[in-house]
Length: 101
Image (cartoon, rainbow, N blue to C red; front, side, top):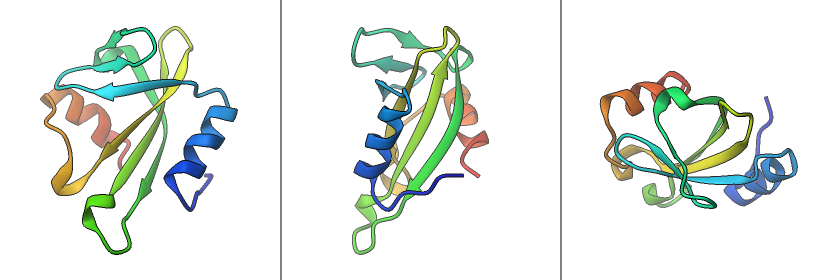
């Protein structure tokens, strides 16, 4: 498994690997920033997960999900974890938790 020192390093390398779409997390779906496509939990698979812990600020706790849509397009979801994580539906929590290790 690849490891990265920073969020920026991870995102740049993942982009080079073809993870070119950017997703935002909503309560019960992901939304692609490029075209507005909404993905429910069953419409994507998580291929890899990268955690980054803030050395001095708990607000810097970030997780990157490298994911693939059912149609083969790939991208990343960047989200906080811990006390700053977003509200999610039970289905979305389950989908992301399985890959959180």
